[in-house]
Length: 219
Image 1: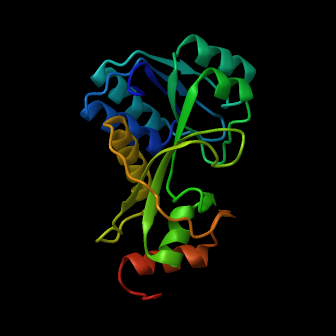
Image 2: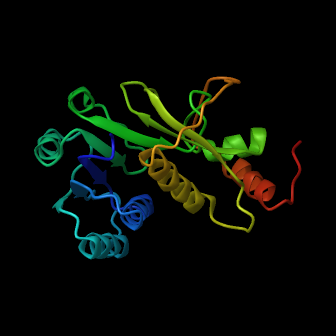
């Protein structure tokens, strides 16, 4: 159902690369890809990589210069070049505030935390420290931060080798969304707490790395 008429509104980020690559490898035909650039996040290397992906897989795409997700002109561009379902891959810190976009389109987001328990930023680190577990939730966004109807939730293993957890975060989001499109389901039976987290302190981030490498036992 949701894989039909699917568009991707994507930033020039590593996360967008993961999404586009995995969607194409799993042969999901996209209605369109709307790639938007932002002056604050210039990355010509990533931009070229995304362009190569789009040309390789022959997706219909357009490029919008120097804008953000809440720009009124950009909203019109999104509506004109999409249908019902949109996967959002935004820049760090961006939050959708345009209620019209949420009303006119099913806007999906993938959050590396078990909702509604772990809302906010860098929750992958907090869940590692608190539970030694990693989750990802696919949901349709609404006006609340990390609020909206949950469609798919899954738990993922801690990485076995020392990897960049931010990169692992991007990989999990892409996997979760593809699993959702394939019709997989997983029911969250319990809700331990509901808390909004903010950007994690570097010391706590380092502790989370140690937990994943087996150098620290927090149980």
